[in-house]
Image (cartoon, helix red, strand yellow):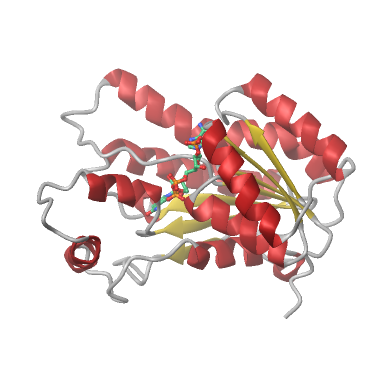
Length: 263
Ligand code: NDP
């Protein structure tokens, strides 16, 4: 199937590792040109180098915190110059989860989490909306979590914030239609930097990486018995963001190895 992404311009926030980097790499493979952003300049340089080996000269990598509206406007201006004044696909991927219960989440942490989850959608969409509107069949894909529908008490703030984000995306799918399609993916557990950090902090340092991840998949009762790898959500992002998904908007696709417990 031709996804219709050849020569398109895509933007991936948080494109320097994990799912964002995999998405950028697969988009290049589909013939797109890709702009990525992240905060850490070392990770940005490394990602630029890796992506340039896939399709030399087709990558723009810029430092930008998605929670900084001025930086985001500057990033959009650079993308406009580089991409010829339009953007076909915006992937809102930047972010991370917070492990905390209601008892140990402070008011400041609640505000931080709500800001991260909402404004990592709001600010990139505001900054890129004019460029998306200038494209032929533009789309936004948000990377969200299954926690939005199936909350976990040990990630109470993340779960609540992510539920709100799904609600926001549904409104946007209506408000931005028919020009811009808006869809999301709902992740279960995907092996990336976030989980590597939790593995590094494991209590039992004798556990190997394989043992730790196998036990995690078992504890979480994942029917496919493993965590996902970044290419798996990346393929779903690329489909939903491509002209091949031209009649899909306001939808969310679960990428979780079957871990949800609802119909
Ligand atoms: P990674 O930590 O590997 O990647 C996160 C990316 O986001 C990095 O490029 C990071 O770069 C960037 N980033 C984080 N905060 C900001 C910011 N404020 N501004 C710009 N860039 C930022 O994690 P994943 O690939 O796993 O995560 C991708 C998305 O998927 C995240 O939103 C995460 O919350 C979500 N998710 C992941 C799950 C999983 O199991 N992996 C489960 C549910 C949701 P830098 O730090 O340099 O800015």
